[in-house]
Length: 316
Length: 73
Image (tube, rainbow over all chains, first blue to last red; front, side, top):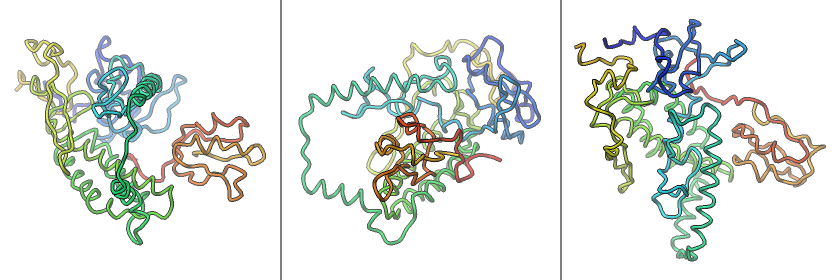
């Protein structure tokens, strides 16, 4: 009863009454002209599944019947919107770092799945979190005394910030950004994942972090901003790769070819990630038990949508 | 096409577009009189400059063509 890659095709779609609404309304067309429907529990991964099977490019069909330009993984943000970023500690969108507030996609409000109204509506939640974070930050700052930094601290920061302007040789930030994006954007890294590919990409990202980023060189303020931005992008890429490696199961938009099953109750959990020295420390946090599904139900009833390569125990 | 052009005749030198661009795409020209496009590759199509311009002097295209291969095909 398990589905192999070879069996996966346009005929697989969600039951009519299941899944988040947008998953069933977004229709894509693969290179064979076959219609691809979203499937509950695998939010928009269908395009990547099609690509993996050699049926790319994939197009959207518009209401007038015409096809859009090609769509692909690069267009979807490399992660589930609003499940990345800072986890808000209150409706003020404050993070667990005092004084740091987040909004939009950088605020992990979990506006995704059935509560996500649909493509292009992200600005609605961004506007709400932006207003809340702005008000929260304004309120917070009122009670914060003026912060004094020592001359040494200021000098250290200045040295760090302007280091790329002092180098006479090295790498440009635009080039490093392109190298990083070329490593991270292909669908087979963060959409159709596999431990081997994640580890290979992580190795390259670590090289960028340790060897290329420390040699960034710029000659103007515009590029200096890009230099610091790409260092943050490398950090972000490392976090995504490490958490993807850590979660050895498939769920939602996290699909691992080498672990295609949902793993309950072991992975009814979030992943927390924290800096520890120069390392990223990861650990698992169980979700509240009251949110657990009814695990007495058979697996195949809990999760009607099969991930490619997933075997059901009853069938084995 | 990203940010396409800024009409010099319409630009009233208010600098709103320079301040509104989060990507530092627009600067004032050498004479500090008119807004000019300096870093078009960094335009992310947010349209803030176009929205903020009282004189409708800025034209932004509908799509971004990134200078790299980001996806299959």
